[in-house]
Length: 383
Image 1 (tube, rainbow, N blue to C red):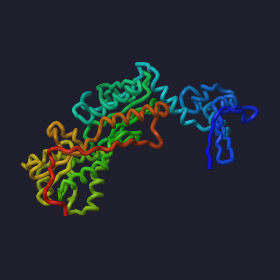
Image 2 (tube, rainbow, N blue to C red):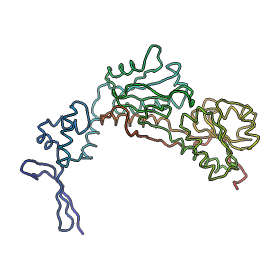
Image 3 (cartoon, rainbow, N blue to C red):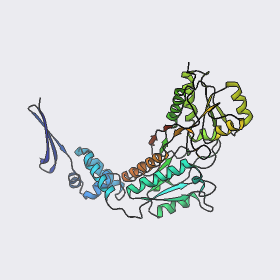
């Protein structure tokens, strides 16, 4: 059996010339032609530049022209060449970019600096800045809660500045089932992505940490350290920030491992010590999973020694870093989440995708287990 291929230019009709691919399999030769932009331009009477813009769904051509080009392209059997697209994308990234090319980062909170209080969110922004620089962009911050500023006016300011892309940082307000979690901005003006899952409307493309898988990792790591009874303690607002994925993953494992090893999760709307003490006395866990110092404070207030009497694992080691720098738990790789948000946004800008997507995309970044001093290997093996 022999297989060979060649490519070149040829005329496959009296009116047109295109790229061809010859594939020879044994003695049979099949020639496939690839339609080029020039053929579509000649057929429609439209310039090649306009054809290119229409095929890439870019601005600069009317809707009637776009429809005409797409109709003729379909009739001719046009298919985009992925190798050419990759080359052009590489050229666009490598060529000098106007230093005024800007992406907007929309922040919230009581002050414009609230997000800087949290290491996780600082890492989101650091990762976004670094990746934006690779594409030739810089990021400018816009505080959505600035006094006297409406979201309508903010959207117009961003649009008038020629900013094509917007990144929405995690909302800073404490979340509840009743609190509004929407951003009433005219998203038809630009491409947009969200970091995290704190916004319910609109449902945008978003880059997030894979909270569900991280709970599995934390449980598996604690089990490998021979902890026999592992409890989950969360503030309700924190679980809402991840759409309940932590509790969902915990309850799934609870079905597999049994209620003896994984007691019912304790979800509180505030750090109520009596409720925690009652739960702890009833189930006697020898390891606790929590996040953002919530469970850590309850353990310390009870007077328990960590890790001597009880192990502690954080679902976000950066969130507990201020009070327990060497805590065991999940590194959410937040810089990579921020970088992934910029990747999605730049891709949307290049495709000309603006507005609220019909089918939102998600980019999930897995976390990594980081061993620390809040857990130890227990001598008693898991039964």
